[in-house]
Image 1 (tube, rainbow, N blue to C red):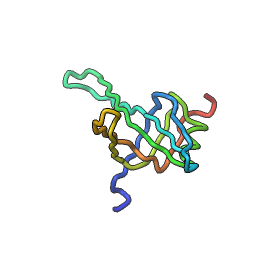
Image 2 (cartoon, rainbow, N blue to C red):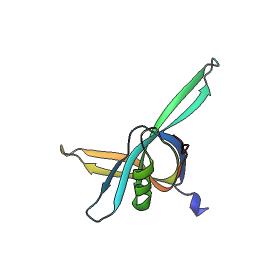
Image 3 (cartoon, helix red, strand yellow):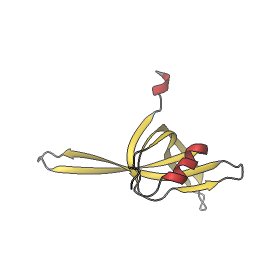
Amino acid sequence: MNALRNSVRLIGNLGDDPKVRKLDSGRTVANFSIATNEIYRDKNGEKQSETTWHRLVAWGKQAEVVEKYVKKGSEIAIEGKITNRSWDDKNGDKQYITEVLIREILLLDNKSK
């Protein structure tokens, strides 16, 4: 049961190209967002669509895969964990962010695209 703690799986499409950078330590990190869509019927029976954006972070080899094969519009599946972090901005205000730290990534796009 421990493997189920703080675990998230998402399938979605990238809204923009990933931002990949190499840190002074030599590690590679990729930051990007995907959109997931849920379609449902409202109380009047009308079809509705709801889009949710998720911020993702990939490190090391996962980031290198993202850099090489993933771009705006790509469909991917990920498994990871939710992380929270905070920092003080230039005005001294506390900023918070929630991200999904990727453990596994699966590329779902058709290779012929």
